[in-house]
Image (tube, rainbow, N blue to C red; front, side):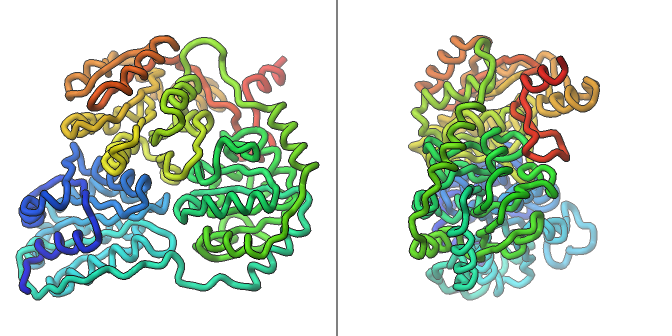
Amino acid sequence: MQLTGAEIIIECLKEQGVDTVFGYPGGAILNVYDELYKHSDEIRHILTSHEQGASHAADGYARSTGKVGVCLATSGPGATNLVTGIATAYMDSVPMVAITCNVGVSLLGKDSFQEIDITGVTMPITKHNFIVKDVAQLAATIRRAFAIAQKGRPGPVLVDVPKDVTANKTDYEPVIPAHTPRSAHPISESELATALGLIKKAKKPYVFVGGGAVISGASDELRKFVSLLQAPVCDSLMGKGAFDGTDPLYTGMLGMHGTKVSNFGVSECDLLVVVGARFSDRVIGNASKFARKAKIVQIDIDPAEVNKNIVVTASVIGDAASVLAQLNARMEQQNHDEWLAHIAELKEKYPLTYAPEGLSGPYMMEQIYQQTNGDAIIVTEVGQHQMWAAQYYKYSRPRTLLTSGGLGTMGYGLGAAIGAQVGNPDKQVVNFAGDGCFRMNMNEIATAAREKLPLIEVIVNNHVLGMVRQWQDLFYNKHYSATVLDDGVDYVKLAEAMGATGLRATTRAEFDAAFAQALQTPGPVVIDAIIGCDDKVWPMVAPGAPISEAFTDEDLKNKNN
């Protein structure tokens, strides 16, 4: 049958099982939006306040559901406004398809009104991108985009469609999408044998879990592997929830703001098994001194990650869940009671602590955990509050912490929370935000209010850019350059002006009551929670230092006395 390009786009989205898209219309994409209007009973469109909000919402939808997130934007600034969200998804391996429309084919390359070479702009931050100048190639290109976004290590794909291509007609035949395998290559028997040999010899093994374990759905096999290996487990920010954070073998996050137990334990271990982690600089600290006593086995779907940041002893390339399943089938039960007793002593000696009085980020995170029974989807912005969310909420399941790990995108959280709430209507979604980050995309409160989404926005309001101030305090002689935000913005009034419920908390009791009220309030709620401007994230590793030199405020006081 003959369909226009715009009709083909909608039919291809339906083929792929897409039920929700996030976007913002404009002149170049009007044909697509006209078709979307005709199919509003099949595909829900969430109109965000800004295209960046649409890209973050598609990201949050994808991370929380495991499906491909889809966002739409028009040409020129509409397309460029997606760039930060696309880059965020690329750094964290999130499957997303961004569909933009451009000026007509005859106007390309002529500096036409709202023309931009968006494929050129996004080439470094997408797995692949396309511009479709022939309507006959449109359906195949969209299908290929979805396959690429999901295959192997996931990531964003952009499809740019000139406006005349959306109007032109061609023959269209519906296609049932084929299953996209996670990994195209068989797992090497020799790599498995080498890994098993190292495992068998280990006396002090440690397991380090990254975001790849979440993406692959490896939790069940990971739990079996840890039980067979009898080893403690730490994770990266992106790996939260892949291994149960309430398990006695769990020791917390690794790296710059990881626990002392994890940092010290990894520094002492003789075997480090790394599952789906890329050895980020924020995790490894001084690379030359990272896990120097250990043999390292890296399990990763992407061979480009092997020996990129840390030279490893052995690697097994493949989907994490599949690799772990094969290791589990071949492993004998290991016994490391003495090593686990030592780690237990470290856990007793170095617990996470915070001030016993006053409202603080850690206190709020623990209270949120208690009031949601540990069953919420937690979304964060980037900064101190992000680290507190990683440290003090116990993530027992994957896809329950959504945060910008690789790019560190301030303004990510609220859009992502909208996407997560749309994709998980029966879950409570909480965005834990700093006041600096909230300002970046706070206009999306209007989106949440319009859609009547019951998400809760907690603003950890210290009236400063908290993490930057922490570095200024510790490493820049207290030169608080451009980090003070004490300018009288009233977030409660702002929330109310946008159609949400606004609450304020300055004490622990007020926060407890405000959050309890928020859980019972229909529609979005914004809680402006006031904390001290000099609260810090502990422990910390100084930039360039080995993770074995993690320190707290008590360590600093003892050092200076």
